[in-house]
Length: 268
Ligand SMILES: [Zn+2]
Image (tube, rainbow, N blue to C red):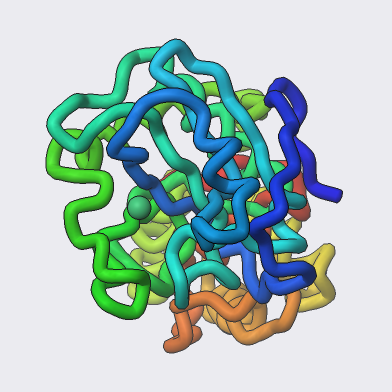
């Protein structure tokens, strides 16, 4: 049962039991109306529902057993993404309270399923996406949530990052730093130890996963570390992410997954 704390839980009839296949992230929608859609979602004739709804004042309602059963919000995207409806119309921006509410949902999903703290315009990548990107396969709602709300996803993610139980600064690992360090290291004999604290977190996690021998946990991201990271990208625990090249260079999706298992926060 995946119920988010701090929401008003109002289970509805419209959902597909045990239909969730992956936890890729969250899809942002606009209600194009006002007031709780509970009655609409509870009426089988509407054929509609969502996981969450956030009012203009920031009230969050949850309607289904998120992450297990799916709501009827984005057709072909339903088994893969959680959905959030936001009160109001496409020609209105999200209120500050709505940004906060959606950020809370995202931070919760980050903790539950390692949703990475990024905005994506995609129907497959893990992150915060939007309804219209799915085109006909997602119901043809190309104007959802509209040009005012779409760019507000950046603020939502930034706020979610603040809400995520913040690890101490020394428990963050940056994708950009790790890729830079790996490239510098393979070019020189001594390696780049500029990001040694982060590199040690990365290597310790790979060691704990049984993918890297202890002697290579040295803060220098050499060939062995890159091979171990490629193995992580290919592994089941690493997830079936879009880093299918599995080239050993960390991406935000596989690094978030690793960070959730080993207590560090992955940053882009
Ligand atoms: Zn929508």
